[in-house]
Image (tube, rainbow, N blue to C red; front, side, top):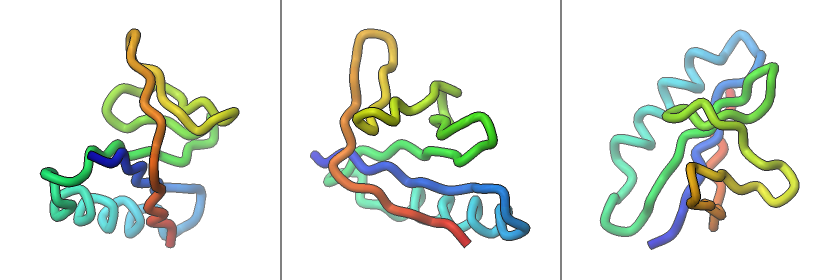
Length: 79
């Protein structure tokens, strides 16, 4: 399965729309083909929505406990 980062949020006035759009992608992304993590663009950095862990921007990966997720694709949902 492919690891997909759904990147959403950001500082614009359209943040709420961006988050709703990402929610639709989360809902309808084929879970038999893809593992997804939603990444929020925050002032403090790019944060995994589920865990609050910051994305490592050196290699765009996410370390959760002893497991490192390297993303195969990024789905940008920024308005």
